[in-house]
Amino acid sequence: CAHTVCFPSSLSSTPGRFITADSSFMDGMEKAVLVSPVLEILDWSCLRLVYQITGAGSLQVHQRQEGDNFDYTLWSVDKPSDSWLIASIDLRNTSNTYQPRKETGSSVALFEIHIVPGYCIECNFEEHHLCGYSNHWNPNVNWYVGGSLARDPQSNLPDDHTMNNQRGHYMYVDSVYAKHFQEVAKLTSAMTTTPVSGCLSFYYQRDQERGNIFSVFTRDTLGHYEEIWRPEVYATISWRLVNVDIKAPHPLEVVFEVAFNSARGGYVAIDDISFSPEFCHTETEPLVDPSIANCDFEKDLCHYHRERVASKVWNWVTVKPNAYRIGDHTTGTGSFLLVNTYFTLWYGYMGRLHGPFLPGNHKYCLRFYYALHGFRSVDNALMIYIYDENNVAQEKVWSLTETTREIWTKVDITYTKPMTTKVVFVSICQNFWDCPLLALDDIRVAIGDCRIPAGPVPGECDFETGDCGYTQEKTDSGDWLRVQGQTPTSYTGPRGDHTTGVGYFMYIEASLMRPGHTARMLSTDLRGSMEPHCLIFYYHMYGSGTGILSVLLRRGDTHREALLWRRHGEQSISWMRAMLDYMCDCRHQIVFEAIRGPSIRSDIAVDDIVIKKGPCTADLGDNIPYSGFSENLIEFEY
Image (cartoon, rainbow, N blue to C red; front, side):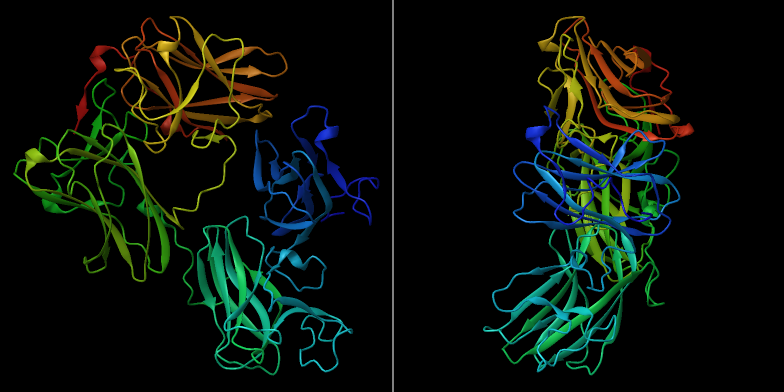
């Protein structure tokens, strides 16, 4: 049972038996959990499930790593079905031991659970489940299982490639029933569940008339297709090997598509799909690391540079915590770039900030934050251009329009160019007195499409889609509220969230509470570990009557609480970062406790909570030496 998740014989997937979780027998429990034996997977493997969901049930598969507080979601589904379905889930090779864990809601059944070596997109089509490949149903042309001794002796279809005889199986599509022009048959792999890059190989035979089409595509979660291969010949006399490189930083499907123009279009057969992490072509560029274009401007300008004439336009500044002007986005106390400072000594300017060069033929996701100050025109205040190696602008991919001021706002840009390029931030001002102050911070560049959302990461919560399992203490005298935008009371609370500037965060509304009233927000139960963990979060404490924000650790065995962190009084108009180490070897919860101050200007907010394994980075600690006293306000360093 080294590569199969095994259960006692009464629960095994022998013919006629399956395991089920039914809400009518769960006695009020919200979920049922099935945990595998501890596994050590040194080679890439594929977990396959045969499952069925009826009613409002759901099924999730998690990875439980040793010494970690959290289970990491590998795959989930909540769509009901009237038949058994196949799920294929990639398990990356690792030296750590872990346990796949199945979580179910109501009315969920499992028939088979297998872990097999190799990638989930690999298949020789000898198994009845077809490795999770599915045919997109068409009334006239479809992919069928070929081979076996029972086939028509008059058929011109080939023998199986895997076994090189009539006993094996492959997939084929035939035009004999095609009735319309461009009848299309699609065979689609399961969606990959983890990034993969390497060589996709398969064998094919083809006997098609000219004008008929056979292509291989990839399709991402947004439904975007990209053709990766098309044959050069219309007929082959034997099985031919195809090798094509794939770079998949995000989940995707492999789609084998055939289009016929008539019933005499011929046939196409494929077999023995395999995958290797090594690229099949030496000229294929490896996946690049675009992190050289990342910069939070805490220590310097990283790999960015200003043109000589623009050196007084893009200024590297630090704003000390104060009650009038926001600090940086990274920590609230760090550095960022500021355009149109009082040190710009001429009427009008054009300032360019150049990023590092990145290779072409990649799809890049550019993210950054900007903030505006002042009630002036934003025309040409900030534009993003893509420049080539000759410093020629290829495209303007974004420009600033009227937007919320005094809050850091997130921008996502996806771009692709065939040549080596760089990102250039451009600010133009025709007249100094008409241009606002503009700040730039936290530039990030990654491979992929910004529109493909990253899956939920356990221990991280930005409150954009919900409360992430955080709950209210039932015995307290106030509540944490999940809201979007500016809080209603003037001169207290944030203007927007920390994540995007226009998203959601949690806060206490002081006008709904009395002085000294307490609101407590509790995390989900954390498993506990002998290893240190790092808690990171952003907090907002602005207002003359601001009270107290505390973070406590509540042990599950004794329910005793220990103070981890506390701030008292007004801190800044900015979102401030807190980072702290803690360790607890038993089940526990993190508690955020806010106490309302003496006046209604006492809103307190939190956002972007992260709990992760390992100690916090030493140079990023929460070492703010102030408590909101007036001597710390409005200090600028240029």
